[in-house]
Image 1 (cartoon, helix red, strand yellow):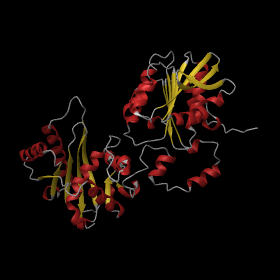
Image 2 (image 1 turned 30 degrees about the vertical axis):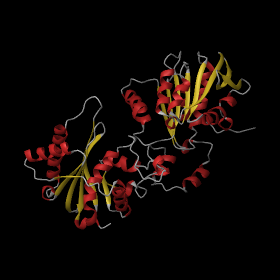
Image 3 (image 1 turned 180 degrees about the horizontal axis):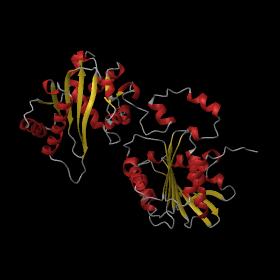
Image 4 (image 1 turned 30 degrees about the horizontal axis):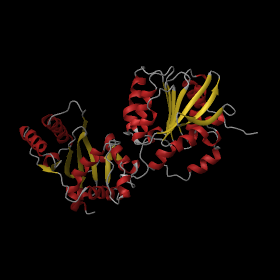
Length: 439
């Protein structure tokens, strides 16, 4: 006789809530049991669902079959053992299930490619379960939402391991659902977060042994074990750790700054960012002290003059905060936008502020800028103030573009999954002082 681990109260609550919820999302660390919990919930939905046609998917057809249909003995064909059979439906892989309310046809699909969305068109699905949904292509997931609009009882089930916090799945789907829920306007949204600590099939003794093998301060541990939304593979700033880089105002006590620098990166529909960097005596430490961050929409945006005004507002604020600021500050602004540099210079002159605006230095390329910051981090000389959330998010989640790496090129990922503009801005403020930093 096989002994199965019991469910926790939180796991049982998620399953119970899924009976009436239209959107069910399980997120968290690896080996947290997310897939098994969702399979139980989804099987309960199928047992009583009024519609006949349904869909399950993964990043590939093989992944869907392995994680949902089989799932090491816990998949749908096992949960409905004796009442299910695999076959084809209109040329597509399918699982046929006999339920209490009639036969169900479960189409099996892969969703990792842009053209996979076309393969599920033409049908209306009563419910859908996508495993590792954030690994699927955005167009496929959007099509899934659309294909369930006519369902008699619309129900979507997703599970995912965490990705960088600005990943499209969070930005376009979960963030909006979270906002509605906070306002009390989304009662059909059922979300839960689990980690390996919630998996009762792993004994406490075994769990302690496993966790000892991880550096608790590493982003790898934060992502894979604690299930936090951060990048842990292909990372650029591998020497970074929050406790060594992020500082509070108490850290500034007794620090004297010999130089201030402001780096400005101009965005179109991306963010426009200005970073205030302070260099301590002998250029021993580099500190990101404050910043300006604004991301405009596609339909309406700021003019150069509007951005110049708001950035100079920050410049005046920095002058009041740091008495020596106006005596030893430079501004390095996006070299490709001459019109903005002129607008910024005009606004500074209008307010009687005598700080030169210089084009950002790009001669040595972005990889050299990245190398400089990496060296400073590894030397424990690079710090970021704790309130600069976007800057911290950027340095934690910056990764190398995997496609470019396979070609032998080192290119930083710039796909909107994290605020990379903060890195450009801060690097503009640091790079001109490379020789004085003696790295």
